[in-house]
Amino acid sequence: MCRARSIRSSAPVVKARKTKFWEHRRSRHLFTGLLHCSSCGGPLSSVDKDYLSCSKARRIGSCDNRRSVQLHLIEETLLRLP
Image 1 (tube, rainbow, N blue to C red):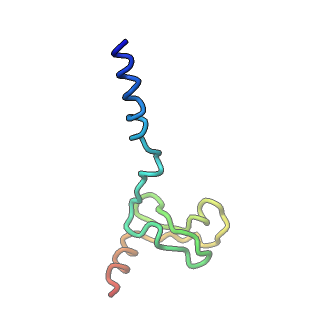
Image 2: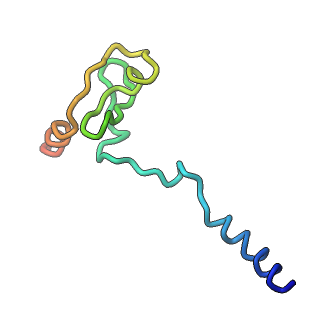
Image 3: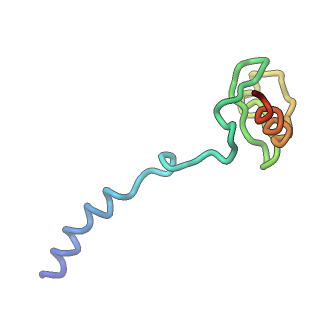
């Protein structure tokens, strides 16, 4: 009986520490969320691991800008700005 009480009393503590998946999700790239499409203003998101493209063009199809840009070119260009 004593053991059952100790397990039940520790259960809320474990549950309180567990967070939702999307609360701890971190972006993979330095400029994620900061860059937007020049055509529609939608966010740029990663394609594979080395490219960024318009999220609206890829997912919804509401943008005509189907170009993708190499991530290293964006990083080099933006990090050189004064």
